[in-house]
Figure 1 (cartoon, rainbow, N blue to C red):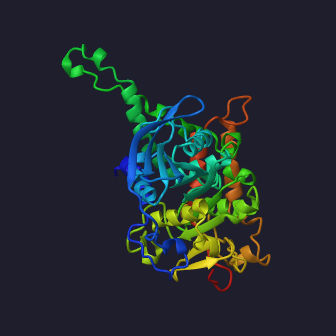
Figure 2: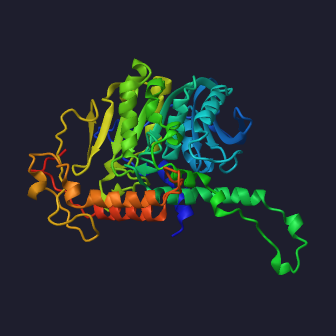
Figure 3: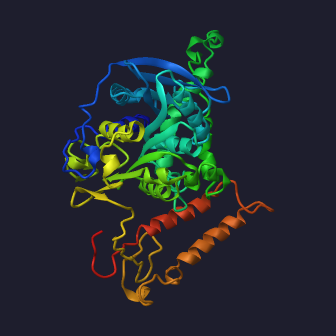
Length: 481
């Protein structure tokens, strides 16, 4: 498996989720439907490697795409750790429709200066970049941002810093905080995601650091020639120190709180189109960003300026026939990213009275029926909730456990999960034993270890496997959502 190449491809895959989409007004997700073919098209001028100075003196690399025409235009910014070169087709399309487009490598990535540390600099660097973009010669003073995954995080964190000229954003498949829902899920480390993502990011860091440590003039004198050094790569641990910080901060503490976007909805002053996927790992955060800003935005205009678009998408490209994983949802499920961005920013930055001005604010894809549906609110007021219950005849807390859904005395209290279910199946006792072992391993006078002892991780892993043995069934008749 060529993991780094796969990770690098994520940004391009997200940008091209739209390939092959139908333009048909039958789809309630109007952003999928409307073409901007009637709009005036411009030739595009390109400027490579513009240096943008941050407040601390570090300069970041950006490419500019400008319409060749008279007048002023809104500016659209994408700040990415995955190489700004991967989005040239999207940038050219947006610029040809009357936008100045800035594609920027984030701090410490590819051609930008500084050191990369996820989330740490994105609020300040985002603020400085937005205000720099607003001052460009062709800018009309209105700035928008777009992009998915971590690029969505660069938007949310920039919005958190409240740059005066940031008017609208388009974050898709991204989170609302970076502890729960990004690095951890319900307190459990998202091991595959965090590990594989870090490995992908470390490839460019390795390239940069190996270049910095290169000393061929010093090495050329080494004899015998077979011992010529070629490269002096840094230790692997130096490529991503943040990964070990994530492991040390296994609770939602002050380390994470400085980047907790959901604590700052009341201060944000941007319109936003939040796009998420039912099969995406960040779906909870995408929805929370919408509901949070819809309820708590800085003013009525901000609250009314929120839109939500949820398809069946995963954290990767959708095939032209609408296949995600093993399921084919049809071509109606394919998002045309470029057209969606154009329609959104035409409304949010140019004041065009399109579907975003007139249609309900929520558009969701109903899986199974495989149709789009427009809604006035989310969560839906008419939702029918189904309770699920855990049960086991003899023991669900092992790899060979027999955990099931409702049945037996786990339901005797008339519809709520009994507090002693876990105790009856040994879950609480086993957890206490793990905790006791962990405490016994601590040096005298310390209350918490800097990193999880190995046996504690084994305990957690064992219980994670055990939880997978529990099968859920709804109580009573199944009800469709």
